[in-house]
Amino acid sequence: MTFFLENFLLGKIVKLVCCAGLIFVLFSMGRIFEAVERYAQNIFGNRISKKVLYVLFVITTMCFEGASLWLLSIFFHWELVTTLFAGSFVLVIVTWNTLYFRNSFHNQARAVSRFVGGTDEHTEFRTTELSAHPFAIGTFLFGIISIVGSFLYYLPYLV
Image (cartoon, rainbow, N blue to C red; front, top):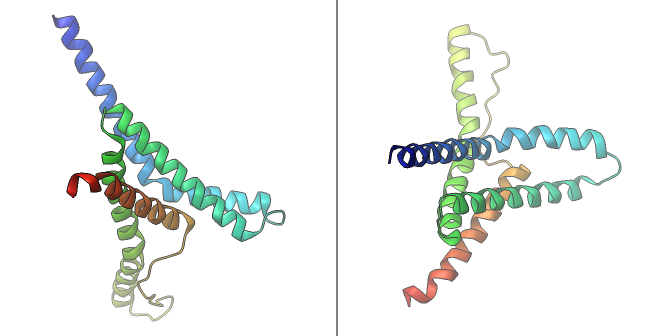
């Protein structure tokens, strides 16, 4: 009996650690893709146009997020459509908040620096707007496709 309980608890702990790692990778994807984008620009700078490289990064982002949520649904034995719906909501909200409030946080830091330092140097304030980074566009497109697909999947149950 204790052997079964130990294996059961060990299995749950392994699942929890893997899930935490997957969530960490999903949330750090922006930084990872920025580094990969700079690397790809250095490698393929003249051979591939920026538009093609941009589209490749958007598609790569969407595929990576889809594969991550698919693995999450398999790992926890959830239905894929439900995982896509909830996961895409979370990814869109986290990405939107991060990108939208980044300039706001920078402006607050500049205002404090200006107040404490008493100087007007290097204190340009930026407007708060969303960026068109391929990671953000891929996340938003994936979110829209997943949410619409989930809605269409559950539509017969609603009617």
